[in-house]
Image (cartoon, rainbow, N blue to C red):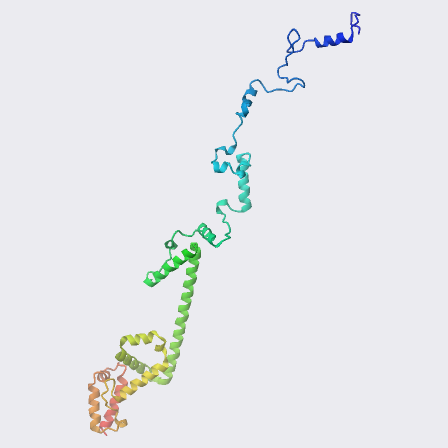
Length: 318
């Protein structure tokens, strides 16, 4: 190889000269040191001075995960740790509620066993004790009504415990059915009574009012107010056939001398003498029952006693 001076060199000498050419970072004597920021061959850039110390020793400078401050039972859950950031977790929660339609605390699992229904009812507001149903009773409620309400509340609690809305619906249904049944019974009783009155009026005509008063007086005299009240409270009090039978009893008593049985007779039917008729009339006038009815125009037996006295007077006069 010819240089500028005309000297000729061999290829080995040229190569030796290339090796001996100083490079950055070398020292005299040919010892080479890598240049700062250069990783050997390839020239890969390194981290600034001091950065390698912070990242060493097992990565002690790495940031803690966002869920590290949660309780142990939460931060160990897979559906927590799979979210890289708090934002990811919040977005997942919002998406889940939108998909379900309600917040998680408003979800109720469908029971698969009978004993699991109680938990569902409690989630729907079932009370802690039967008294908390608060079944309202009217001011005029009897002790029997109160006892029935307590038994009903206890049953609803033991069988459920059912939510208050279900118990309220049951109470309203029972009350409605009871009111309807009472109204139907009342209407039936009124219809039966009207039918009986119509039949009695057809049989007795204008004598209906006084004769029925006489029947009532007879019942009171023989059985007291209790008997009359029991008949009025039962269907028997509306039975027209019974009232007609009692009416005939009143007529017979009037013909035979009344309740006390003086045997006064009735004049012509008895075939008595004028003297006997006079004695019977005096007995009638002094009788504690018929005498009072004779002198009291408003007495239910007044008309029948007047008729009996008239017959006696006719017999007394021949």
